[in-house]
Length: 469
Image (cartoon, rainbow, N blue to C red):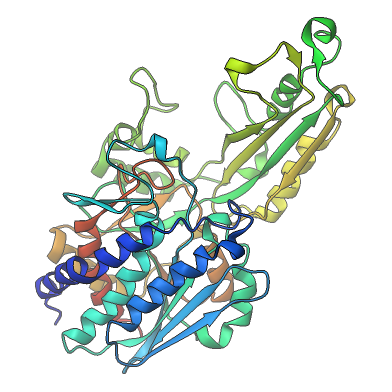
């Protein structure tokens, strides 16, 4: 029988003495994902994160360790670590070391995206929670078993550096590295979390993503708005007309029927169960202005809105000068970066093609309209965990939190999940993580809740032993 308290004590020491120092060093590497840094290869920071992590792994004294580095031409680097086990079964762990950009001036006083700062239970810095900690946690879960004299199945760790760009390099690596990946019984992903830090949460659904740039152009040069306003239609107004084809601006509902799925009784039941645990904390955890009201006040419906219904966001723009220096000129173009989340079960390739057709057909006033999409990503629905894995997860959760594990959904996208589910349709998936309220992944003051990461290390160690049993 697993002594969960002993494993947690071991984990606490491992984090304090080994993981946190190396993770803080990782935070100091900017390591922008390829979509945000065209010169990523020349800068060498993605490779530097793998160098750092590989060095840390090799210092852990793990039995049966083998490390494989891959650099396919023109693609972001990838690391595969293998630890041979003596029990039947195979576990594949996934994490990534590339990061989103950050603006230091938006961080609180005394904090910086490139300076790992410990403040009580939190480690601040870009990449601390998304997803720098994941590889350290997963490798440590196997080390915990070895350090406490326990057998374990074989473990493989896949660490990529393109996730924040949509993992567009990953399919080539999944094909190239098939002999190294084996045939996993369980795939474990740390790039998630839950709506509080009091429970162990497993993510059973993730939305997919269509993103790209809508470009509207009406002229070859700017024209005085007093001379042409009313004659030349505004590019911003045309963009509004086009977005009205996609979204009802008064409700936020997406108007393309094929982007929706049937939300059944099971979805409503799970939403109510999650809402019973978290109450209105989902809304309270969001950094909204005091007067703002949610689109849907019912917490269960809000959960369905952000996990099982499509949603459009305009996340960037070009062609708009700063407000304090804008001249009275009718602009030549407006470019809007669009992010459209789609629920699990919607084919992202077909949806992307349908979105492009809806935006580009019959351009208003004969304007030049183009939608340039990035590679889309499917959503994910987890199959049931094998009974022995589910039982061990429950026992570990009850021992360490006093409560059974909870199911949640995440409205974000982890392209790897759908890719791996397509490649290994018979594998089980455990998507979890230390993310939770206020962790601010992708935003200012990103931070890792250290006690949750320590506890989860012990839980993953316990669960890993049951794979293939």
